Image (cartoon, rainbow, N blue to C red; front, side, top):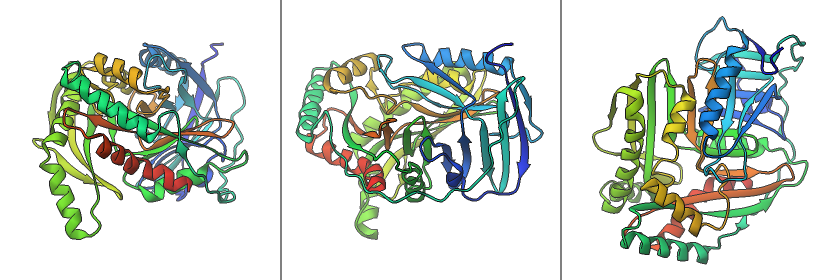
Length: 410
């Protein structure tokens, strides 16, 4: 019997309003926005990938899994049937594995309809895992401190990046810094998930293999031949009152520096998607997106697939976008490796899920922390650096971007 052969059965169930309370407190699996999405329990299959071909290898492996599996799915809607959660390393040289995880149980919720999918190796007994809502464990407060790159070191790195841009070595580069901490052994990791979901309901809150965060940026959504993406680049803090907030949004919308940074990101995504689509359109001008702590410049893209690509094929084509690496890509990646004294792991890589038909939803892993099995925490935040970037302002922007995770821990 093929070791990857799985059996999946989906059935409708009564509405479960609290997906997070279903999760394992040590290994939560979640993809959710506005209290709708997918919660995973247990592991039926785990696949790991690495290197330059990690995403194309994952796409091929997933096709093999689907081809050898038996799926009963009377609902036949987005998020039902056999699917896998995934998180991929940002850099091909990363020591952090890229993963696809097929849970034993998946509970989905959308527009008041709820369903459960149970998955097990073909020929074995279906998993007997009850759908129990478990209260959150004891509250904890964790402080995150500078990691491998101090605030002063980050300012120096930004200044060096601007020098490279002035020499025309690169047009834009995205530089990140890190914060670190430690979570006590028995801490309920669902608390972090819950706080992010409540604080940032319009973002994708995700938990995959210890990577937990809330991302505002949809890398790609593939659904029955249609593709959508939202590109975010360009950031400013929210104002302290209504008038100041309106002024902040206007300042961002009219900023030449942020506009240039944003345009690099949009063109990066368009260039990657065009070979896979019969047509693709983008918002004529960027618009501002309001989050609880900041404004972003955003552009929405829509297209129609023309070559049968799956969502895994598309993330392989898209990653890394200029929004998280820079332009030109190869030079930006080389400069990131030179100036960042740490392995980004899965920060700024694709995170999301893929279904048996290849459709899926993927975000860029931003506003996140990687939690190790021993409780070690590493959080990341980065900024797009262009010619007129100011090191002190870029450092302040990373503080804004750290806020969701820092506040959720603290």
